[in-house]
Image (tube, rainbow, N blue to C red; front, side, top):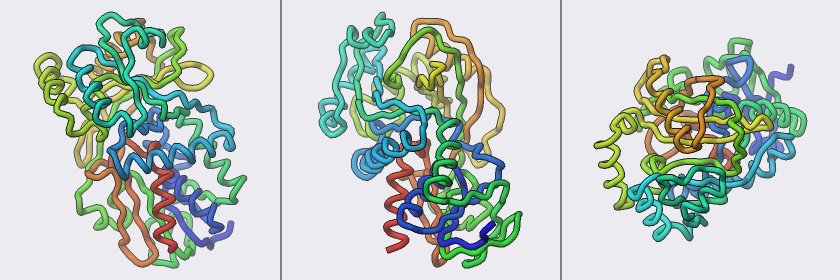
Length: 371
């Protein structure tokens, strides 16, 4: 094993892999350190959705668009199942529809969206009873993250000669020396992409603005005999994504939920349904609990509510195959970049959009750090 490299990357989640690709494409010798035997964190516990629609207009939207282009280049080369059929956000009542209509009027052109009638929603195989309409975005791409992440590791190794050291906890960095649980390496630069681990390396870099952790609950259900092209969301999602921020109609939606279903607001529940792979199984989620150390225990009431929401949207009973918790870093602005020491960059995606923006962000980081 060669213990010298140009750039050392800590973390083999999507943020680390994106930076490994950006560096390797520029001709640098890259070594990626991952403390587990394989990637097991937030990058394999999500929907596998590259969400462009939800990103705040401006920088974050541009990062998502750039990331989409890279995904569409990488996924076929890495022989990963994927689809690029966009998303449909369904309005289940007039209040949700008002939000979608306001968005379309103010921002639809910038995001390339269009409104759908309830009949057009039915064309996707969904029940239309009580559906007021929807908004369609063609920008979203989908893949199965638990499959795609290991494939990207193999592809980066085969195509660019990126070296991966699994089962290696990086305990200290004082360039050119990296001290790990498997010995000492030497690198010219280091990029730390450690997910929600703020304590191990350069904790002061994450102190301002302070970061929390967000824990979410998700489900995988059997194929219910339905073929979905686009990812599905509902009007509840407009309360969570930056692209909808500032719309006047959101106040009425928040008030309606507070009066009729306060659990959704209290637990940060909204609904995404994503069909993945050849099996046609569905990923359903999610909820959001925040804190310095959210408890690892899933609440059955949240899982039951997510399942009920999905069954209502799809118009059929669903059989749960798996349940799990995801944890990611949470803070303002979408991402946090710091330079805690010469030649060292810390990178944290500070909301659940790592799959959506990491490739674009990595290109920016490498262009700046290596200028």
